[in-house]
Every structure is written in structure tokens, then in C-alpha cells.
Amino acid sequence: MALTMALSTRIEELEGELALCRVVMEKGVSSAALSYEDVLKLKEFVGTRSACDVDNFLWRMENYFCAKGIVDDAIKV
Image (cartoon, rainbow, N blue to C red; front, side, top):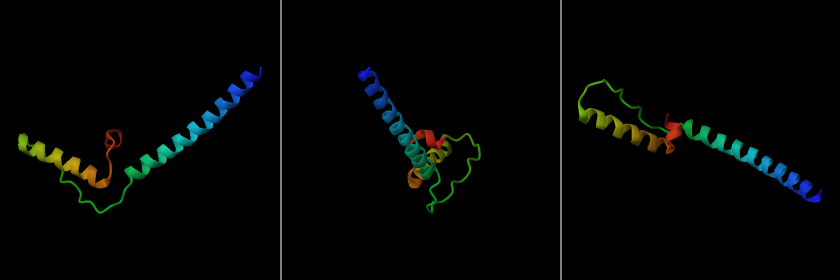
């Protein structure tokens, strides 16, 4: 009985810590996604079929995300 109570107490403590971690992670993600640094806006991809244009567009996108401090792929989408 004592072991069950101790485990129940520990589970409640861990659930509280997990909830706190989730809140911290959500705030971290939103602050990274809403960074308002002075970064130039990207030129829109015009849809040409040149491999060089596609490569340049992707390179600019990657540098844009780096400049904004967005490194997690899940945030980029």
C-alpha cells in the first residue's frame, strides 16, 4: 500500500513536470516562429523550370530561415 502511494505521488509530480515542459516548449516554438528581426523578404519563385533558379530559391530560403533563427524543420512548414 505504501509503495502504491509513493508511486502515485511520483507519477503526479512527473505529470506536473511534463506539463511545465510542454508549456516551455510551446513558448519556445512560438517565439522562434515570430521573430521580428530585420531580414529581407524573399523574392517569390516565379515558376521557371531552370534548375539554377530552383537551386537559388532553395538556397535563399535556407538562409532566410537561418537569419530568422528558425532551425527546426517542423517550424519551417
